[in-house]
Image 1 (cartoon, one colour):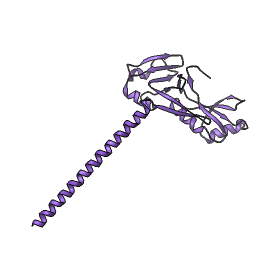
Image 2: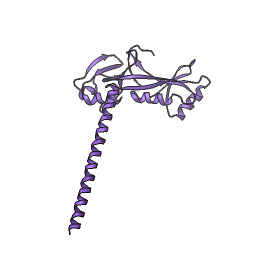
Image 3: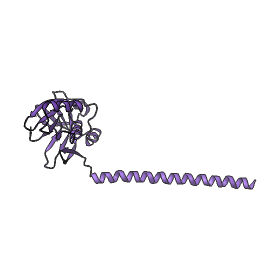
Image 4: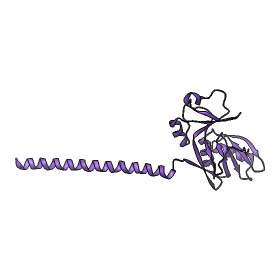
Length: 212
C-alpha cells in the first residue's frame, strides 16, 4: 500500500514538474516574441518604408502613415463618412490628399494598405529622399529593348497578361501599361522590371513637381 502511495506521489510530482516546465517555456516564448516586436519597432523607429526598382537601381520611399490620396474624386468622398476628423491638405482638380487621425486607418496606411471601405482611386502618400511627396495614381511605364517591334511588344503584353494603354515614346520604345492605383501598381512595376525584353519599368508616379 505504501509503495502504491509513493508511486502516486512520485507521479504527481512528475506531472507538476512537467506543468512547471511548460509554464516556464511558454513564458520565455512570450517574452522572446515580445522582445522581437519591440526590437523591430526600435529598428524601424516607427517609420515604414517601401522599395521600388528602376532598372538596376533600388530606391527607398518613406510612407507617410497619416495621409491618403484620391485621384479624380468628386465632391463626395467616402473618407468623409469613415473618418470625419480628416482634413484636406491638398485640393487639386485631379487629386486630393487627406490627413487622417483614425488609428486603424493610420495602421493600415503604414503597411501600404487601403481600407476596404475606401473603394476608388486611392493611394498611400510617400516621401522620397529629397522630401518630395509621391503617390501612385496607377499605370506603369515600361521601356522595352529598342530592337523590339510594336507587334512584339503587344505580343509580350499578351503573354504577361497586361494591357497596353499607348506608346509614349517611339524613340525610347516606351509604353504605358494599365494598372490599378496604389501599391498594386508598384508591385506590378517591380514584377515587370527585369523581364525579358524590358530595359526597365517604373510606376507612373505623381510627384510635387509633375515630371510627366
